[in-house]
Image 1 (cartoon, rainbow, N blue to C red):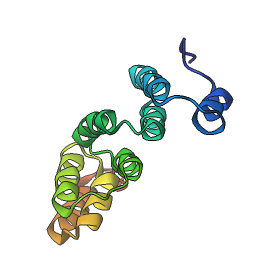
Image 2: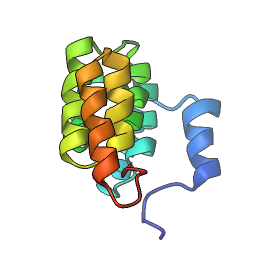
Image 3: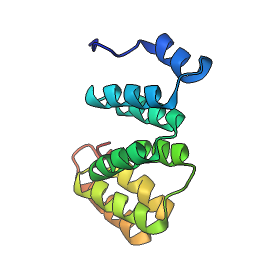
Image 4: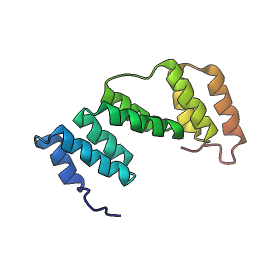
Length: 133
């Protein structure tokens, strides 16, 4: 589905990596991607813009979903790694949401063996046994 005012892949790459696009413009582009629900693209734009405030704002939203992949992308863009307690919190949220693969990844990163045991138990209870991520 095409959204207005959102560049296609080639144009996005040009804006992000080939041209000298101003940070404010990249951040505004990130806003458009975020509004369209294209979180990975928004994170990429905010990261290139150096817009830590907007990255942290998105981080709060994706933590609520327990989305480890987006958290990792944000952490890379911010140039930091999440602390053990952050990964535990993300793992708990992912487990609550039934996103077992994400919960497993988060608990592995935090070294939380009890959390990993809970994921294994939840995984056994699910019909397919593969989790939801």
